Image 1 (tube, rainbow, N blue to C red):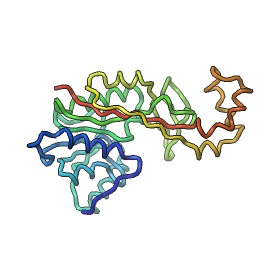
Image 2 (image 1 turned 90 degrees about the vertical axis):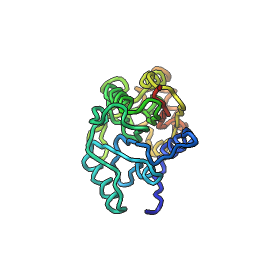
Image 3 (image 1 turned 135 degrees about the vertical axis):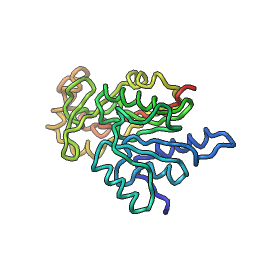
Image 4 (image 1 turned 180 degrees about the vertical axis):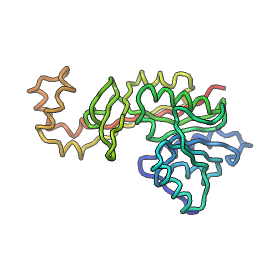
Length: 246
């Protein structure tokens, strides 16, 4: 099978693989290492990167449609990555089954309570000393109305791909608390400015966003900020590279 290049928003999956390689003892190899992808579906599943490097791979996904796409990819390339239906909030695997576990742009669709459950499950199925990669949407993302309606603090619901979908946003303190049981090997917040979307925003729509900033601007002052909007629209994600304490 030819080498597969993951989509452009997956550099941290490559970074996780690099961390794994750097963490190996000199005598260790990857072919006996077990890795789990939580939400492994999609037309180009990131798990294939680990399969190509010799890992024993497993992947779960709660979406039947996403799982079918990943299985079609496996059939096309003649590989088996042990994909199955599953919920990261309640996994069927035994304790300490995997050497590595990760999720990529999937946990962000869980409520805050369910995010904590999923991270707890990832901790449970990971071996002591094992490595984990995960990420959450940062509260620095703005405006929140981009994602929909905030029904609970930090929990926003909106339509995505024709379905009502949740997004959970976390402050730095909240996200650190989520992983307080782990050793933090690395942490990075990535901010992507949505300048194209900002430029398409009319003055009328700009003023509709005002309730989000009314504690910092008068309406008149906010109107004058319209010309600076390209530097304000942003999506922020906080990524963690974690180790389960031995």
